Image (cartoon, rainbow, N blue to C red; front, side):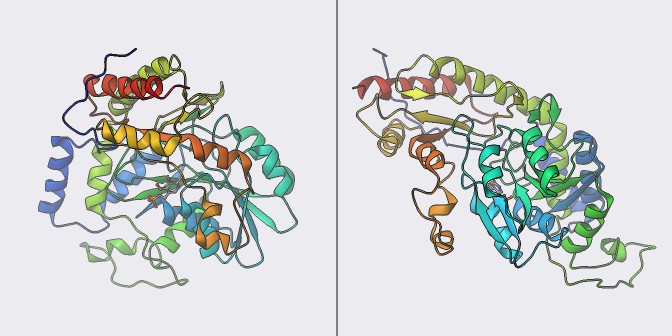
Length: 391
Ligand SMILES: Cc1ncc(COP(=O)(O)O)c(C=O)c1O
């Protein structure tokens, strides 16, 4: 039996990794008095594209905006269907509705939590226009199979890479050599944060050009520069667009975070390795499976409880962790069970793998500023609960 001693302080589920460098760059941006979209935003786009080895990076104020605009660049609208996973955050599916199109869910591969290509294949109809695969938790989808289906049916692929910065498929960074586009999130919990923010990445000139117009109110090119010396006050609105742009205060954070990416990832990987090693030894929990083709960026560490072995369910396991001062989260409540999507006809029971996965999952604390002591404590707390409630 483990010798477990409860700690006094709570371990938060997540904290952003902010150093003096981020604070100094934010301060410098404020002092420069260029706080809206400007030189730092442009620099961040360039450095982000270079980091991924992608041709274009269009900065936005959220991944939700990127996902929306990605579909709009293909004129996806009423009458069209877009296939995605129910094991995601709502905005992956809501943005399909925002286009006037219909989200069609396909179940996950239970091993990875990512959309199952065989299930995608079953959902393709003459109305299908696109697939939105989600690289769930930083795990990567089986992209060769997804692109093979897309090519065969002439579908656009809009990768939801909200979790997947640094992740690799068969050794290549997600976002590198894209056939369609990928959307990234820089929300406070993400591996790289700008507080809130996002990026649409593509190698396709036409997608990038249309996206730039759509995210900046439909304004003609480089209108952000109209207040600078030499910038032109004249602009045109070429189509009704959205106020989706990133601004320099966000980009200031992003530039420093990007420069620290490898250092932050090194710590995430070390923590994930400890979790993987120890949770494999604990009866009653199941560590994430990482397929050979994937390099996981460990945005989330999604542990599954095994109710067949325990006398408690996932919900109680979370309460027990909380009582031991460990913060957690759940990613995700399946989207098809949410009221807004039930109204479209989806219901519980439609996606057995997604629902089985959901009932078992707990996202554990994993972020660069966690100390070794905290990491070991989380492991011991899980071990203590699994032993205490073993059947
Ligand atoms: C899988 C997934 N897609 C999209 C989003 C939306 O990201 P954002 O909050 O940047 O709009 C999230 C948010 O966390 C997410 O988890």
